[in-house]
Length: 313
Image (cartoon, rainbow, N blue to C red; front, top):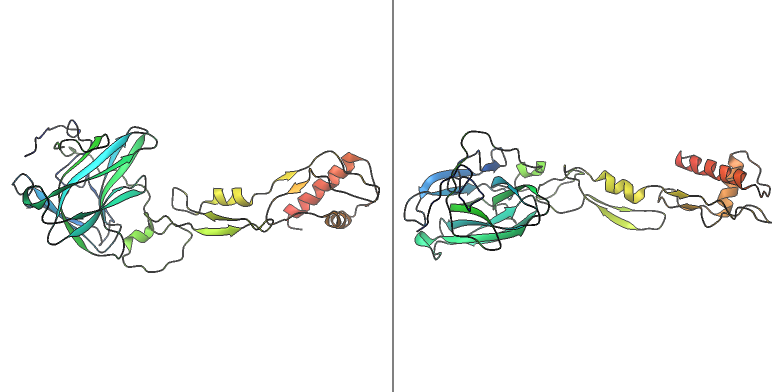
């Protein structure tokens, strides 16, 4: 048997709300919000207390289908998310997931768990980063998109590395569900086998968008997505950005121009200038290439060369 603690903000030790009312959409947001959203049959199944308050959740054939609750947590703190679950028949997989941290564990429910009516209490422990809002989910299993049904009862979140004794948490009174964080537009489609996009297709994916090679040194780097699911242009520009350094020394030579070691062009588009490149660029500017010891003149000409390169001339 389980003890119950009522409270408007959840149980005294339970940081969730609606711990047994999975149909309560103010606290448990359903995703996706189209024809593939999961359905909840409230109080339709026997529970671990011998009653009939367990809820059957029917997931559609969408690996992103889930029930999700947003909680506010402290920084760098360990928490344990738990739920009682059983299969309708045989065995069934589902995921307990911290959507914010992009971390999840696969659980397998059966009909022969150690608790009353075949339930098992499953747990998922995680450590937060910054303080703020975190989204916790009971989600369909990954892999081949398959419709699955799981019976849930008694969800809980408590601070610490193990699940505390279960405490009931009441639903929110009034209000509306919080808007979930970015979710990929591809989550609305089930059974996709291939796609091409510079936007993050599914919220759960960890792939990079593109791989870029810099021509100056053939260095390659993966470029992923930003927090909004768009191509990470900041990372891309940082990788291929131009950097010019001009030193005020060693610009004269008895045979003509010589670039000192302080002149560097690191952008992969532009490459590196040789002595002959410099002479040709100066000629294209209509300037004399006679020897000169006037460092100011040489620096000015070099800057003009770099400006022409940046302009694509």
